[in-house]
Amino acid sequence: MAFVTAAGTRLSLKAYRGDAKTLLAFNLARKDSKNLAGFTIEVTPKGVAPYYLLNSLRFEHPEKHAQDPAEPATSTLNAPLHKFRWVHVPGSFHQGLKPFYGKYTYTVTPRYFDQKQSLQALDPGLSVSVTIEVAPFRKKGLEVGFTRGFTQSQAFVHHFGIDALIRPKGGQLLFDTSKLSGVNAKGEQYTFAEEYEWLGFTAEDRIFELLLEVLAKPTLKLDVFAYDLNEPALIEILLTLARQGRARIILDNAALHHNRDKPEPEDQFEKLFAKAAKKQSGILRGKFGRYAHDKVLIVSSSGGPRKVLTGSTNFSVTGLYVNSNHVLIFDDPKVAAWYAAVFEQAWQNQVSGASFRKSPEAATIFSTASAKIPKTEITFSPHDEPLARKILDAIVTRINREGKKGKRTGSVLFAVMGLEGSGAVYPALKKLHADQTIFSYGISDDTGGIALYRPRNKTGVLATGKPTRTRLPPPFNQVPDVGLGHQVHHKFIVCGFNGTDPVVYCGSSNLAQTGETVNGDNLIAIHDEDVATVFAIEALLLVDHFDFLDRQSGKAGTGANTPPPADKPAAAAKAGWWLGTTNKWVEPYYDDADLRKVDRMLFA
Image 1 (tube, helix red, strand yellow):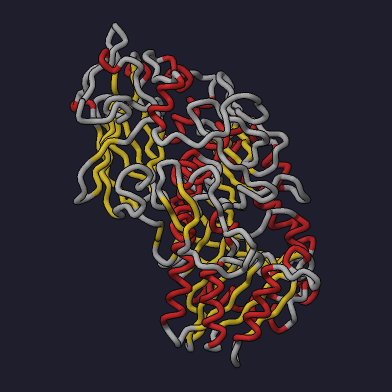
Image 2: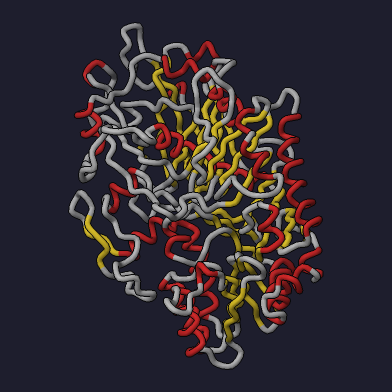
């Protein structure tokens, strides 16, 4: 089940299961929102001491409000949250970076001001609790993982500092990730491996779990489609498998990855792999027409294909530790066999686009629904022009259906790398925010045509993951940008969240007509409430974060590029940022003309 819900005398609470995180959504009748001071959230992992989530702000005069001296001033017990939804990621502030996974109980209490605008003591009679599983997402034979993808964030800078290195200087392909990478504002040292563990999040875990499984079982073999390939620990595993005759790799050789005069990392890897490879291992360079753009690991045994990992995540330092990305693992021989057939076709035909377009693998919409796998459809490109158009037009048709839900508001949430390109999908996404019959929340790396949240307006949000010249005001420290690279590398669209027929489109395809006809890609549609919810939560996190950063884009003189403060709440207080003592913040959530009301109704 995608969510659990409970209701009390005033509050109704929904908790949605994400990938190692939880979306909490709150609702109150209009009459119960009078003098609302916010929400207090207590978290109780099973068998672990309970704790309260923290706010970034506190009251300017805590002595005028009900306070528990045993809790920090920024505890939501003392400083309630001014939001009607919140995403909790265990390990951000409590439990360290290796938090407990399992059952969590969330207890949420609406808090109120008295007539003097002072916070009243918590009333347990108003509290509502729900219990939900918090863990990396698995459903039957499907696993999903995400990179954290937040190098442009306060959390990253506080953990690793403003000058954090993502890889050592010098550009070497292989390096020791246990070496010191830097020092943060608190004087704490950290290694590349520690930085990668935080940034790679569950996507890194899923990739290396699968690789280590293959490495540990001599009966298993691995076939790989790779586009970017330079993650050092991953490369070491591939080289070990090459020496054991257990790996074949199709590696992109477009200009970005191949240069005879100045070898690219992929060229360096090809040379190492070819030298290491024993019989039955091999490497083949190719690009179909433009790119060999898949990011796929296929595991086989003597009995045939067993499981496959796919998604948008490149097997590179940038792909895993800078970009916002996803991976999926299908632990299902049927699905693995489809990918294995695609690999074999490309291997036998020297990664020929012309040959692949004529193959059954390119012409088929593979579909499955079983007790083990949610209803899933997968297509493999490059296709011929008519089929590529048919596939993309079907996505647009599904998007447009969300505007015809009648009394129920439809929804589309998405994170895609770009919005400029051929085909029907990009124009449909670019104009979504103007359609007030659909709740739309989207992000791409394109910087044109963005539409941020505006009070008293029901139009959707379209943010960019590459804000230009962002200057954050105190108490925020500045954040690094991603230069010429990408922040948002996802390619996913969620339609019908919280509806009767949700679907998520995902995979490696950039959702453009040209790409579908000249790139090697896989495009996946999963018709499942739980999976759609997991992706929807990722979209919410990205859009909310970058909606704030985008508002600071192009501003000058706000903030200074100084080392980040070790104590952010203290910095907020020094800058004069305080928690408000009126319920003015509540009004948009009950305004018929405001997107935040639509938001509250959709999620809570």
